[in-house]
Amino acid sequence: MKKLLAGLLGLILLFVIAGAVGTFIPVPFATEPLSNRIEPTPQRILVLSNPIHTDIAIKLDPYLIAQFGFLEEAGVLLQHPDAQWLIFGWGGRSFYLETPTWADLKPMPVLRALTVDQSVMHVDLAGAIDETQDWVTPLTIDNEELRYLLEFIDASFARTDGKVKAVGSYGEFDRFFEANGSFNALFGCNTWTAEALRMAGLKTGLWNPLPQSLALSLRLFNPDNTSEALTEALKLPHNPASF
Image (cartoon, rainbow, N blue to C red; front, side, top):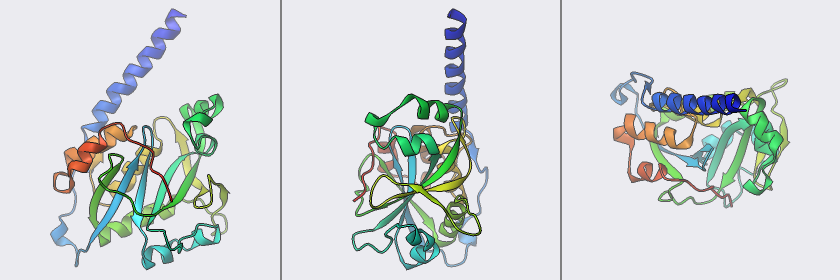
């Protein structure tokens, strides 16, 4: 028993050290200067956090609705009159689907999240989001960077014969879809968010397994794109609520 506990504590310590080191190594090491881009137009995106998970919110507009029109066929109400943001997240199928709230936490989804699980994309809608809340991290990118971000998100959906497959929902305004890639504790939802943000021209840490480490790396490596909201995001965040 003592050896088991020592081994477990060793793994936890290794995870903490690796997470700390990964936070302070910037990726990518260099980015293309904004001045080299053609007619850059500022675009606002949000990173939404809870204690263990991050999502990316993108402002709904005709271009976004056209690009992700396939979601409407699966029941996502993109043109709902109160919808202002389209929210994307990637995660483990078992934990994601079976744990809508902490009260629903069960051993098997946790075990699968700590080992290997199939992945899903979660798509949700939101109305107005108060960007001053401590679970919201506003970021500004340009139109070209937004295009790369959307291409990365689109490629995360698994397709069969060109079509996505819905596999469940929490309620009326969200849907889960089969996704590409396998989920595990080392490369999970927050590392997916970090990779997506890197596609959008932002720098993150080499490895960001937790929302707090991701927020810290964003603040460290994107000084021209930080605000008090990023400082607030390092606090214990809340669950974002959809309309």
